[in-house]
Amino acid sequence: MPRSLVVKVTCGAESPERCNQAFTVAASAVAAGAPVSLWLTGDATWFGVPGRAEEFHLDLATPLDQLRDAVLAGGRVTVCGQCAARRGLVEADLVDGVTIAGAASFAEEVLAPDVQALVY
Image (cartoon, rainbow, N blue to C red; front, side, top):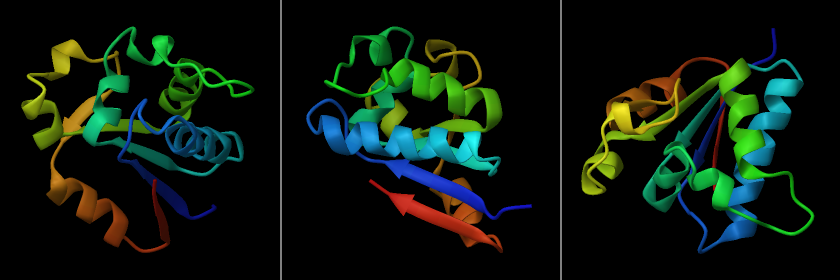
C-alpha cells in the first residue's frame, strides 16, 4: 500500500494557481490509489461549502468542484475547525462528506508513520 498523503491548502481564490494545484495533487494521488486527506484552511474553507468550488475558475485547469468530489470519492476532505468557526460555518453548511476537525486531528494525521504532508 502506498504511503498516505495529507494535503493542506491555505489559500482560496486570491491565489488561484496555488489553490488549484493543491486540489489537483490530492485528486491525482487518489487516482493513483494513495490514501488521501485534503485539509481546507483559511480562505480554502469556503470550498467545502456547496456552490463555492463551482464558482472557482482557472483557465486550463480541471474545475475545482470536480477535483474536490474526486477526493471525496476516494479520500477525506476536512475543514479546519477554527477556520470554520471564524466564518460561522458548521458541518450542516458543508458539502456532504466534508467534515470539521481541529489542529490536533491534523497533527495526528501528519505525524502518523508513512505519511507525506504537503502544504499549499
